[in-house]
Image (cartoon, rainbow, N blue to C red; front, top):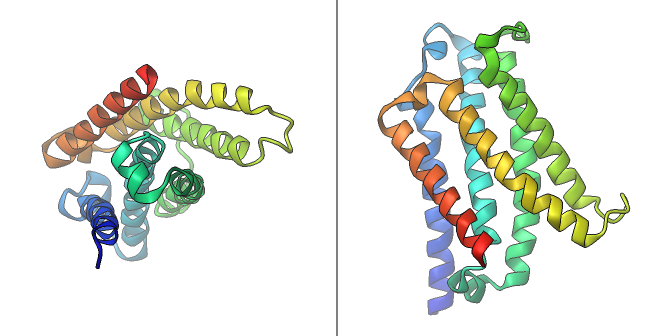
Length: 203
């Protein structure tokens, strides 16, 4: 195995390890909403929470894929990284769409009442709509008659809003992320995102 192949496998291992570790959070740091669930309802709720965490991480990976890091560019090639960025965007959208379906399914699809205490959930709904628009416009830019310059400008302006909404949603929608390891892990991700965005802005 040559050095390039080794580092590629190491990159994939780190990616899988981060995703795998994040997926254990709903098991080791259960929120109060899971305590009262049993059977299929509990499975759906927990799976929905896992997919929510995965969706948030995939968004962070999106920034890294197009971060123009020289080491990654040399290892994978810029063209492949952009290709992976597009594929990851589609996977992110699919995961984000399934996430609320499972959460609502655990409550037999009883919708949240229009009350102020459910604002984190409504932030999540708004975020999902934005992600759908974000990915949709990115993939159907030409058929929609949107120029590359316009699309790029939209992309750069919408990205910070998406990440802001993601972390507002994560930190407030579940008590799991109010303290302890989940809180610090999410905080580290938030700091990484801010640093990546500042770096990209100045580059």
